[in-house]
Length: 439
Image 1 (cartoon, rainbow, N blue to C red):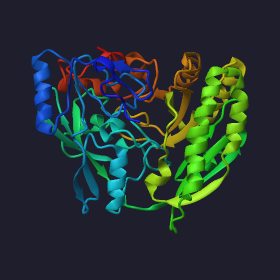
Image 2: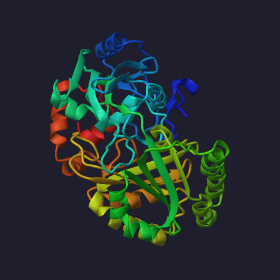
Image 3: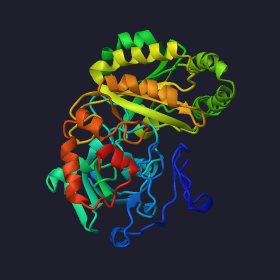
Image 4: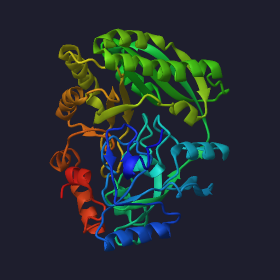
């Protein structure tokens, strides 16, 4: 599932297949010192620098024609501090490996997204999140950061040390420096009971506040062209463990959610008129189920069907109205949408450019099967999201610019001022950052 490092002629492509780049050179540092040297060397050669993780962003946030830093040798756990309940991990470590390693030590992150392929620095730097009433994004669980700045120096930050850098660099967009290590808060591993069940779209909207308030982690998928959703409630449990049986899990997660879904999308791409029928069948294919397991086995699921995605955070109070508008738009547009719309929440946090910065948020994600034209759908959806002062996920498709962000992020100026201080020469610039942060 990882991005292709060197395709033909040194071209790099992201997971969604919608971004490619040809850097002047690639560096795979084996230590922080080597990375710092590579940054200093790039500055001397007049080249820009970007680090890239597993390529799970749908934006060109990591694209460069300069020096591309690949962090796959900067992996593994540096230390576990059981007294302060933290783990410090190298920036290139995939979330999958972190979750497994922590579970072995009897530990876990509090909350996580549903994909585990990303590196910890790529996931946090773009604001990757799951769903939670009380617990926020992966970046909201960061207690300390180490980053190499534009002059090649290594800066450590936390609430006590360089706090103004800490406030911004947890979701730094690769604009402030290259993150080399992250310290996360962890807790003793716990059990979650997941309850997945179909529910009519209208009922989910009518009961949304209740469903949100009564569950630690609530999310749902709405199938366009239908009045159906699939809901998922994850709550802490005293046990016992009752994982999904292997065969049943394979049928539901691999066969139905990945295999059959892949074929359905191929059919839908070839013959768009079949999509509403496929959607009705898909929405009925997944039956209710309940299971109990350790967090990463409940929160995360394999994603083998490739897609492109747009996701916006709207104020949580506006989510029901936004979804009604989205459904009305799809119904009258003649669009054929084969992928479900995903809805999640996060509490307000104190990270400068977090999509949940200073406000309780709900996330609405729209997807299209890879290779299907998505512009009309995404443009229409984005118009609805921005009317509610939506904030797009930094790693997912959007068309917003610095002027827009300065309106929807009260602390936007704080971030750009820090960038001026840490990277005055714009060593870490690229076209994406020029658009979203300004020149």
